[in-house]
Length: 489
Image 1: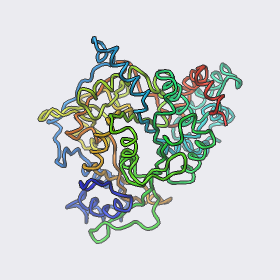
Image 2 (image 1 turned 180 degrees about the horizontal axis):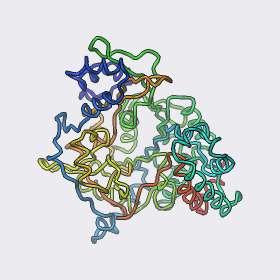
Image 3 (image 1 turned 120 degrees about the vertical axis):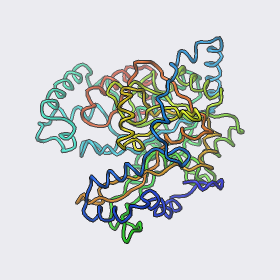
């Protein structure tokens, strides 16, 4: 966490403070938790974590009665006035001048697919479909069988076969989820302002593993998909080990599984000096946001976040859509530093909901990890189907950097297997959505369409819905042209 001294903390500095954070989160219960860890009492540990993580605002616990679900305008309402055309033109000018940063989170490991995939970045949906139609249910990886029962598996296989028949190999682009996003974003940017892809900056978060190295090598092999390598920045997301309680004190967990610190820490790295490597091989001394702001002569820049498994941003309408981004930019022009895009929630997902504090009126995302106590679950039960976070946030770059330098993201306690024997250990995680709760963020949200839902690819059960997204993209002439020019490899 930042110390408030205008300097971002390095991984080593964060690791050195973990014991104090864990002991603070579990204050008054350390002996109890030590016993629960010794007994591997997962229920007691989960309950303790839920209570430790309960929502805090500015470091103080918030009561559910002080929070209400907040409304958010529809995109077309934001762009409905006489200034709508000018707002689109201003966004196009921002793109044309390269004052846009696209933040790609590409560290996903595809663990829910077992040995069928090696990371979401390289996951080719068509290739996966061809693999699974040859499998009997008993031969499918355990991760797949955990996703669906036999009846659902066999029904999905028949639907996948039909989709494959409707889309013969000659029309399919052999692209992983990561390359699909990058190619689609280039196509969308060029449609807004021809040639802008050479000026726009992209930041690529990868795991600090061999997989991350392979992703960086893939960018280079594809000549950065047509983006200027001097405007491409790579940040390696570190993995941190687990902790336990010994003698009522936090202690390192020997030989524990290491887990990535989460997208909150990855976001902190945007302001960490020396953390980024440029596409041309230069390791920049300053932080990546500071470097970009200096190159843009401290003009306003927009930072847009993208997840590797978000299928909507792998289609022409959702990648870098003019109207979506113009709506977000309009809210930023009105004073917001953080703009959240919301989607419909027909299945009643709890977490990432858009709320308002009754006291000071601030609006923010309530993260799932902070709303798991009975009181908070009751609050969310009273508001089923409320819109929730699509994780396509847009930040004003200078304000984002200032928040990262000056403010703390709250740590969350996670109970996870420490090793293959599933003995529990304690881990910490940071969540980027908590930036929206800072008063200075002046956060606002919008919805692109009242009916738009989230479309993620996480596991086998998502494949039937995912393949039409790939088919639609593969028919896009602009995407096919970029693929033929250099995205092919």
